[in-house]
Length: 503
Image 1 (cartoon, rainbow, N blue to C red):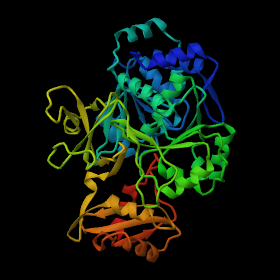
Image 2: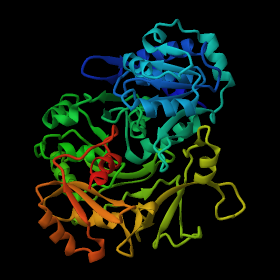
Image 3: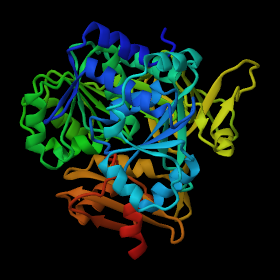
Image 4: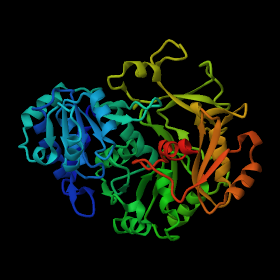
């Protein structure tokens, strides 16, 4: 096994130096060039950050320069923190204040974002200057000699339930284990052409970075606005012979209607994560890419992927898709409200353990202690778990069903209910395209947001056939398009601020 994730890059660059590693519609980067750029960036950063330091990478999240930036931080012996320059200045300031980076690596977009802030005191390095630095081989070798596989490699910031961002730390060991397991479970090889749509500050993009580098496979970065032009999106996949595509369900839904049946014959892997995927648009995608296996996986920033499975050929419209079987390296405990272990077939809150689990939250010991538990069942041996906050259960054949969030249980009209149960019912109503259900705690009202040709009368009539009266929404709001986050999940915060607070 590797002792450092950079060993994968070094082996691949030596084996297939001229093979294209990453490309977009303007430029291409071979493995030899990627290796050189990363070492040059590392040679620059070692002068401005200490070993095991932290570098904020504030760069365009859809830029090919992100990957050599990340790897350059690793060569300097540090942990990289990918940040989105387009995020609100107030949020960016909060993250940087909590992080206290040793340096900030930027591009033009990052510089403009920094110009709106006054509190950044760390050295700022332009990537364009860093990549021109002369490689200092002996100094890089000395850093490697002092490094260990449990040194941090990345800190990925995610929104906390309190609204305060939290930075999940993953080590070299985490990425090494995850890369090997991911290649195994999906059957990727060096002929796989990965289509990257997720910004590099989003955990979903990890599958488009480290497995391809280990294999010597090519990654094509789709244009940033590709989802807005579905026909062009399909054309890009065909022209670049993309065989693998990982996106959120919202992204798959966004282009599903515009793609023609059989138009993506080379696609072999369609991978969905981040939200629950409705059956109707997935059925459409199965016709668009007839030779593809479609995979549903469950995970989080803290645990990467926990379970994955290929979706079978047919579901009922209102049936919940499983997220496959847990990785053979993963262990899931199901617990009741008192924290006692329960039968997996009955289910409960999930505590997960795997070899690529986060090391904790950066500079946040209280939330680390609350979220991660050592030997929670007091069995007397070391095993560390992450408290997901998700409710799930296993089917009799060992597949995982994720039923919703523990904090998605609400009391409506005096009855305890699950918001996920209402959303599941919505997916089975003809004419419904996408949407979600939110609960307004102060007023006790249930809001339903949806897109598609369904009228409010038809929607409520459909729900009345499936749900108890107390589970029906109080306010129904039809939208032409749902708001989405930068990572293409439904933006529930925007819905609350834009609609619920005004109704």
